[in-house]
Length: 330
Image (cartoon, rainbow, N blue to C red):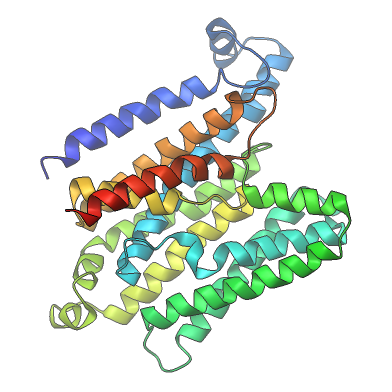
């Protein structure tokens, strides 16, 4: 408990500092005086458009989405009792990608800007339902081993369908689909903020109330039952909640990996496996990590923007390998 407060304070301060810093970053240079003028209700029309309609929504989506993905990762790791689990291992990203690629291939994006995220969310929900039905097909109990296998199989099936669609699509569709599947916060709007916040924040609070039951589940389901935990109820609620967070994130920003894998794993080495501490700190560090990655995506190759999923992978893989090596020798 003594480690929790300083880490939470550092992460909170880092997030508070990163958010205003992000207002300065982008293809159009803005001075602190410009930003302050806009925030006080002044500035030019172009400056207000850039800050209030592009950069501020993007920052909010990135911070909420990063926190949600990290929290979902910590939850899946607790459910599967595997510190290497992460949100996309259960086929959710595959379902969302299939929905988005289908819309792109059929040219349905002309119906409106909402069509692609709506299709992605529907695909993610389809994946959740399929995985859940397969995992409970052998009985009422939710077997986490079957859940994991079902996610892998469903994800592989969706990947095969996506490959088929791309193989028969034109080059423009293929490019759009590949860029979307790399993940990006470019073009985030206030509607995206509403979607991500509406699904992530209440669900995150729900998951944090399950911290004690998740602690008992981590030592085994039989032990959890003896300690009075409603094991099946906790597993179903936690799986559904973490999946919804992931689905909303993928629908808005595409596939962004490694946040839900690296963040909880790193924190677990520092603060331990108590989910009363791990879950809220995962949300904070996830927000800091994804916000920082998005800033790097914008400035590393200016004026070209790197897909944020590429940045999280390039940063996340070496960090994870270091963490894995450290944990192996503990």
